[in-house]
Length: 223
Image (cartoon, rainbow, N blue to C red; front, side, top):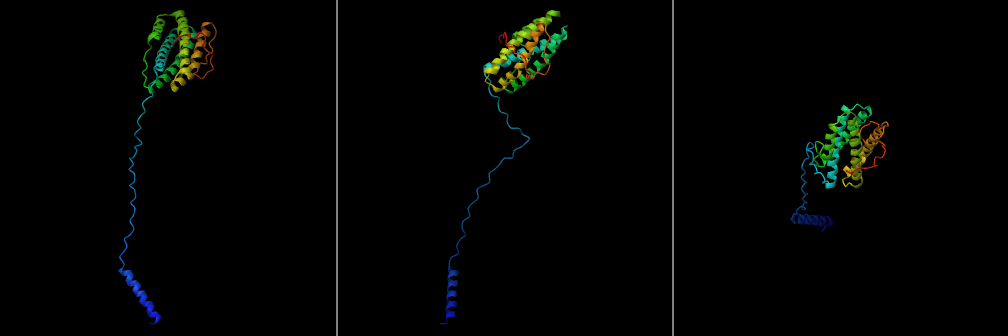
């Protein structure tokens, strides 16, 4: 047989065999994992507020006592600034009122964030001092204000704030006490100078507690 004829016959046989072979199925396709479902976030909705951390009993006492004495100090200073005839005492009372009010407002902000209710008015011993002061007039009004509010009340406040700054467990209340201790010490030093007949050296600035006031720890009273 001619070689060319043999090649043609072989090619035809191979083609026939290929046509008779069964068709192979396509390889299975792997299924893609379902896309995660995401919930759209509404930017206008604020996240849920975290509950305030609990405040220890001793620090709650500090907040309540600082608030009560601060309120009484503001009221006493207002009263004296309006009624005294002594220019030095008047200037001192106006400064104390302004700066103590700033301290009270900051304490109110911190207490509110921690869920602590503060008294709206002076209570207890600070209220008794205030009532006694309100019944006085003339020079006795100024002398009593300097002694009971300028000196005694500030000694107690300094003692209270120092304990909180040194021993307090709540960082924000500890920082609050540290911040305003210089202001309280300045108030005490000014009252002592006026009482001793010297000129008050207070700067008359806001109650930031940043001034380098003399240390008023001498003769510290109880809180």
